[in-house]
Length: 227
Length: 307
Image (cartoon, rainbow over all chains, first blue to last red):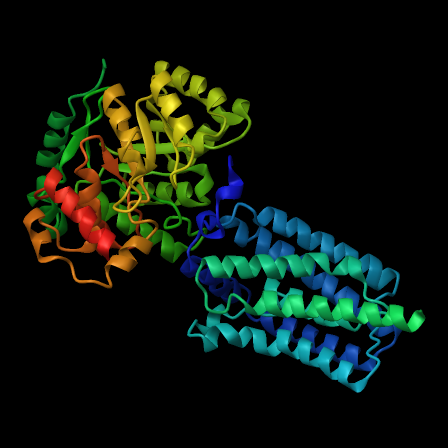
């Protein structure tokens, strides 16, 4: 498109909010009760995170990679692409993230939960619980149908947020290679929701930015302690 | 232009033949058919209000939403509408239009307008063929270069297709008031039949140069974003409709906005988009009854500027 930089997000938005949320409704309806399995996987991630250790880190990475792969295929490619011409690229980015999780987390073991203090541990658990249990409630609390709930492991936003929650306190130092795609997705999702005038547009970007800032802070502290 | 059918007679014959089959809605629509304006290059008359599909028809695989859009199309045709506009840039909109045409049957006088939107000039024909299949029609009436994208490559292809009878009219589009200088140059130098641009009660820059140029060059004008994607109407609806709007047979702000546009003598057709049957009837109804004269147009613009 010529002069693309002169277009704002609202000019480029090619579907209505009604169509967007209906996409989740049909997705949830067609795949029920897969949401329960996704929730179980989320609880397993929580349990592994609490348990800690190298094996737990590798298992978490594998579960998250599986979720990113599923969202790439089941949501972006199969569903979102029917209303968004860019969804094929989103699917590709999600596959790349899954491969990065497998490589850096499952093979190289860099996702070992290492929350040093009780506060950090609680923060990590809180973030995971937010992505698993609170995020799906936001839409219904704002008046959208329960059937349109966005669930971890199936919908992109809670999957990205849960991943960032894990990344914040994983490894001795933050694994920076795993941050860009989830953070970028959360920002993009926020822009999309803003363009649709959804009242919850700020949730995913805000949490993602706080998590990324937390990661940067952790890195700075790690450097100071080394120095 | 040669080989243009006698549209008025054909439409009359169709109406007579179909009269016993018509339901109440169709009967009501027939009492007030939308006014038409001639395409300068051919003299063919098209209703002053058409149907856009940006956002509203991009509903993906959702069967319920597809059926709802098909109902909008049916109401549009029954109310006397003809011109539907889409683009490969509109996601699933072309496919959804095709669904509607298949579900209720393609009206004989459908005026199918679409766009070519691809940066590789060589791939234009393949894209247009893919679009045609999605609509499920034998050929497009109007094919436009979307947002001037590689127009130097696409226009010769479109002229060749027109010469070969693969489409009837050639056009070029812009929106949001962009690239008006380039558009004016193309209008002045290329033998296009149609131009599509943004014009409404608020965005009126085209009145200065492009609309007079279209009249001078004999180019039909399709107007997009008549309601600024709904934001203009939402703003206007906070205020009561002026009582004098009844003098031009306006019953809503939407009709007020549309009558302002289609009363400009250079405008051939405005293409509001909607998801609702009542709105499509309201929009098409704007092409019935009295239209504002120059003084009334000035009054309409002034009142909106104050709100």
